[in-house]
Length: 357
Image (tube, rainbow, N blue to C red; front, side, top):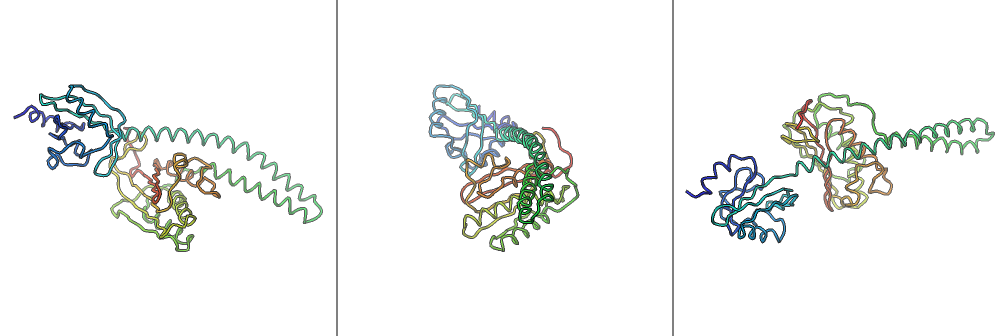
């Protein structure tokens, strides 16, 4: 029995992903953690080149061979691996020479989850700062608006003719419009009125509204997981959050003239999912997917900020409100977009309590 064979039971017991390769970078062993990470079977791929499993860069094979030949070890951080099974992961990995046959041990630590948590925290902090700034600005705007509206009402009483009162009416209407806009920027200030509900009833309500608003010109398709249990949530707030996203998708499809415009509503269960720094055993994932032109990349990273919109006549408030409503449910919204497909993913914890990571 070889030294590598002696170590296999120990490697298989580790939760860290480990790959053993020989000097030609052919697979000698892969523990279960590595199989799960790379979505391949060790038994079926034994002896295959390492390049059959992932691609980082054209320089990676040369660096690995150099490490094997010179018995050097090195560590790479935040490496982007394109898996040949179709996915992409971000990892830290350490390469260590092993045995007498110029073999290598590659220890892999996926950091996607940590990066996502860090990104969410930065985004939440930045958005909270923006929200506080908007609150302060709204207070400064609403006070003068109240004065302008009151003065216009008093002026209307003193004016002799109705033709002049028409102008004061315009002032009052515009003051009301600005006040409503400011209130929308602040978002809902009510806490969720939770009740047990079926998420698919909520989605069907949204689908009915979108079909009516598009006069049936947009196809809506439901792909639901019937095993999802009831959620403890505010029904009206969830309808509003989902409707804002679906309505944006509908408008983008119609304005771009997309052929065969389609919106898919998808539900799935996610197990052992982390939102922020809280770990949830079960999370309901809701995807709203359209086949439209996509969101410009320069807008995508700021899409949840107020007043950011890809449409000329958009207010840029719908997604901000949706995010606020989902955050009130301890949930999360993510967006991924490219030409031909935009996907908004909403994650809602299935349990009332959550545990710290």
